Image (cartoon, rainbow, N blue to C red; front, side):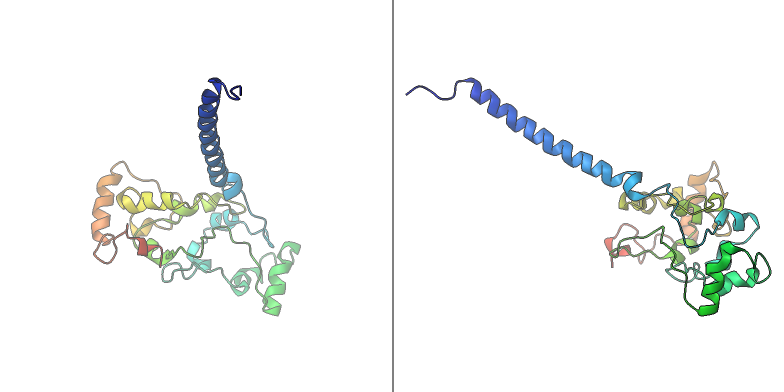
Length: 219
C-alpha cells in the first residue's frame, strides 16, 4: 500500500501546532485588550443622568465636595445627597427651571432620583472612602478633575493593578490632609520626601494596615 502522508506531513503538523498556539495566544491577548479598553470600561465617557447635574458648575461656585457628599470623611460610602440638600439652594435659585423638575418632584414625593453609578466596583471589592481621605489620598487621585466635568465620567479603569500601584508606594500619592479636597493640587518636587513623612505621620503602614494584604480589599 502506498504511503498516504509524505515527509511534508510532519512539517505541516508541527506548523499547525505552532500556529494553533499562536492563534490562541493572540485571541486571548485581543480579548484582554478589549476588556481593558476604554470602550468596555467606559473611561472618559460621561454617563447620561436623569438630571444634567454639572459638578463643574457647582465647584466653580465654591461648593465643597463635602457639602453634598457628607459621609466621605466618616464612612466607607460617599453618599449621594438627598434632594432636600439640592433644595436648600434651589428653592430660591432656578426654582422654575424645567431642568429641575425631576429634583422638585423627588423632593415633593420622597422618591429618590435614580442616578446611574459611574464608579461601580465589583461586589467582592471593599473600598473605604473615609480610610483614604483621612490618610491623605485626594479625591482627584481616583476620580480625576471632577471640578472640570460638566457630567461625571470615570477617569480611571479601577483595575486591581492600578490600586496596587498606590498600595505599594503610598508615598508617591499621599498629600497633606488639608489638600485632600483641593482638586487642583499638584504634587511638589519633593513628593517622595514629603510622602515618606506623611506616611509615617498618618500611620499609613501599621501592623493593622498592611496595604498589600488581600483582606484589605477583599473581605
